[in-house]
Length: 148
Image 1 (cartoon, rainbow, N blue to C red):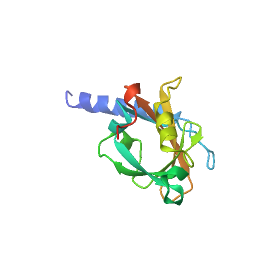
Image 2 (tube, one colour; image 1 turned 30 degrees about the horizontal axis):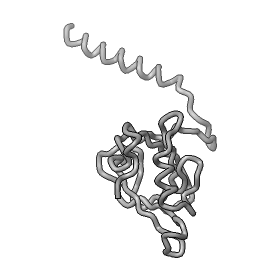
Image 3 (cartoon, rainbow, N blue to C red; image 1 turned 120 degrees about the vertical axis):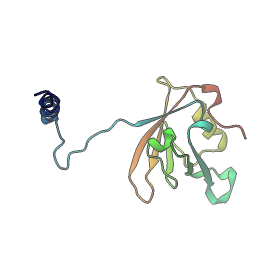
């Protein structure tokens, strides 16, 4: 009889978990589900677990940024957990498009304080026109941009 008690407990737990999942609301086919953006928490941009390079319009720095391409994503970092991948493009910081910004303007966008402490980045998925949002949250606001 004593060996039947653990088996009975396991059966009860399994049935309880199945009944809890039965009431879950699932989206219908074709329905768009809005997901919350993933938050990359770090002390600074230099410690956020990813790096990017700027490509300039007409290959001239003074002509403004053409695009920001993610060139490194550290393994086991918050950036990796957010799904950032090498080759993806940062196309917008907050509500400002990256294309056409100068280096100083780019730096100011990363350093500008925000009401909720988050800096939303719009990311263009690699080899696609699809976009998603990843939010940066820095614990050291004065050290957001890496020093050159």
